[in-house]
Image 1 (cartoon, rainbow, N blue to C red):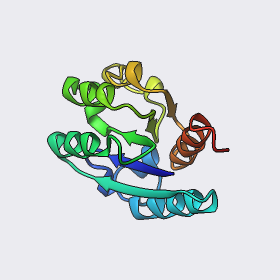
Image 2: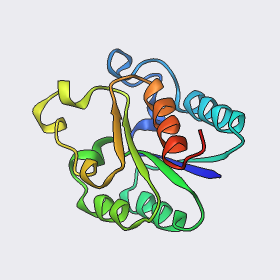
Image 3: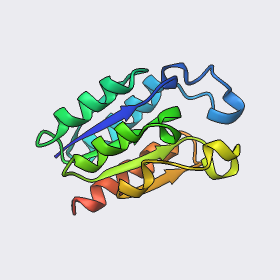
Image 4: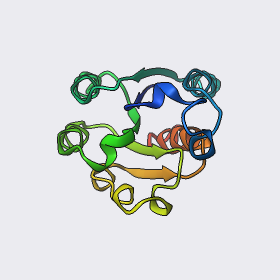
Length: 145
């Protein structure tokens, strides 16, 4: 099995950007942790980060038929992107939305996710562990645990 991890805008700054909210773990560290966890289960994992909405949509569309599930942290696009929501809805594999912080305990404009309703599930508020929990969920959804 193969999984795709999509990281949205500003996640390339993890480790230095507002560590009191997002922690000190870098994006490279998260990707390494996920690749190792996937390999331990006998699965492959590809990670991709972009600050550009269209690039995330293109990568998601290209994943159709090429991966068995997607983990997505849409970053700020969580609250603004109908186009990204439509792309998630169009793929035929399970998509798990993840967030490092608990978006429901933050500013009111961050408490609404446009993507949650078309995702298989949401993991929010566990820091870098949110990604690991999202991977566990995808493995379970694929019946591979």
